[in-house]
Image (cartoon, rainbow, N blue to C red; front, side):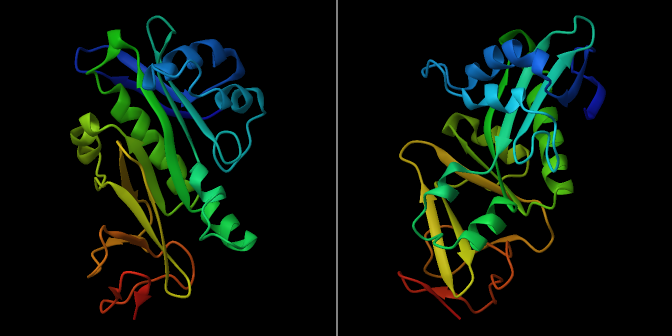
Amino acid sequence: MALLSALRPSSDGAAFTVRDARPADTGAFMRVIALADPIDPDPFGLARDVLASPPTPPLSHDRSLALVAEDNDTGTVIGALLGGPPKWLFTHPGIDRLPLLERLVGRVGMINGLAVHPDHRRRGVAAALMSAAEQRFTRARYGVMTVDHEPALDDFYRHQGYTIGDALLVHLPQQRLIGMTTDDTRMSAKPLHPAVRLADVPGAPHRVITGLVPGASLPDDAVFDGTRLRY
């Protein structure tokens, strides 16, 4: 079990600890993480299976990361974060080879859910959970962190260093470009590795994530012709 952020003081002087979630945290974890999507009756049901599995690297539970923020005075779970590979990697038609999928699964991280109990908001808990998650993904050699979030959270994620967008565009080998978008939420990204950057490419509707895998590093003269990258 990793202790990620011990004795973090909040703005009101209280302290909390960010750590890996344990099986005993399952009930509290599920109650808090559900606040990230209150309309869905069970938005993060997969977290039960994650927490029931043994701790395994490279993240807390293999390719999944489950973190809690625990109040140091009461021992209660006041915040929760669930991360892992984006689901769209497994269904996108542009990812047509298993070796490419395996490389991307180990390079693209996503925050699937982040929530803080209402009584403990505006105390730095969400920012501490995000920071701890980014540290874990970085140590596991991921290249980029992504998050699908409501527009109302633009300022929060911008403050955390994310580029706010309406879509994700990813540069693949052989001058290919794949994209993912949603109807009513943002899809924002933050590089975690020096080789990865968000490039402004003439003709592309959004910034392009490049440098994720070998053979996918955009030159400065790259352009997008509406169908594929040219360079």
